[in-house]
Image (cartoon, rainbow over all chains, first blue to last red):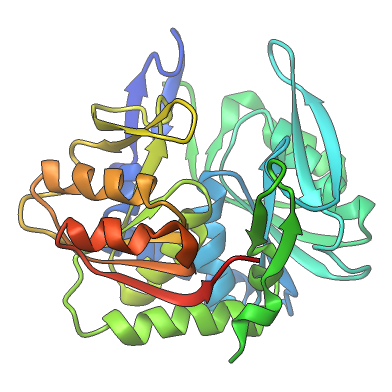
Length: 175
Length: 175
């Protein structure tokens, strides 16, 4: 299935010069949403995944569906201050300033095999920080799975340099 | 299954006097998460639902899984400024101040049967505003489905006074 055709591009959002890839048009399309979750499911169903971790907020939609389909639990990775119990936190740099992601300390047990899910990889700042969170807690990141890879931003290099694997369903280059 | 036992209560979060019901302990438990999605699935599988709408952020996890299981599309209802295309917006009152939720104008077609999903109902401010959003676009809200109902806050009355239905899996009273 050509899911690229159901991803909407919104020029100059959230700021001038950015071509935003909007997956809400994919998610509302039952066939396309079903295709995405099934592609991931087929790839990981024999990997003995213990849990799916999804990154706030769009990663929750994909990750929640995939965790259920794989019949495992779901772990939310959230922005600073959103998780109510004790957290591990990781700060990372953005183009301007920095951001923080958090995970509950009791979300991962040592040795657990975690599949890390988000909707999109750009520079991979959030994904790399999320890998660090899982590893701090003794978890093993089986792979990072995303729908969209923005190739020009070279996030894949960042993930692979860390010794990790990335899987994307759709690649965008330039505009 | 007793899912109440896997919901963690965190006193005085996010502020003094609040007993926060934390579902991350439920979500990470594969059996409990599976139970929740299956309970909703069994309830709605014959209702010819066209789409599941989930409320940011925890409603995305439940709603994403349920939409996939029902083999329908997913519609995100988000906080102000998060959706990139044209939106319908609804402002509602909080204890202090107000909040805004938004939905993409092209997310719902007239006559669509929408199942509205969130993790929890408290005063029902967000749920009621989300119902309004869907109805502004001509959608029909089949039911509001949540895991947790905080009975003392009487959100059910607010939903039922609007002529809508609420379904919850677990009820909490007081502490």
